[in-house]
Length: 169
Image (cartoon, rainbow, N blue to C red; front, top):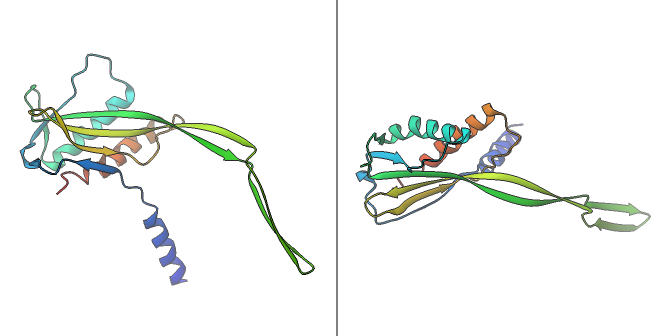
């Protein structure tokens, strides 16, 4: 019984989906004490408000506060990138044994469907050099069928996991 529990725990640990990150190695990340969001005059979406709320609650835990002027050393840019994937279904695999004969059979997929989803991308830009110095990409999928509560929880969790990897040292 204990072996089954340990095996299940190992399996679930191996399935964690940490965000992918990239960063500039020659940047002094301790200089970033305030941030601002990318200036945009376009109306903000509902998801944008959720993302900004999550960032505003979690970045201060890293010692970085929201600036109310345009002179912050760090600009935060976020977006949801649309992705598509073809999923096949209808494939069957069979195995049989009868009277000293064995056989394996397989049929190819009969149908395909396109699945649309989004990935959260978070970028930090050094405003002095105007260069992206840190980037994180969500590995979990944001789907259109998520309820507002699930979307809010999705952004909270993803941003927390992304910021766990910042600063990179």
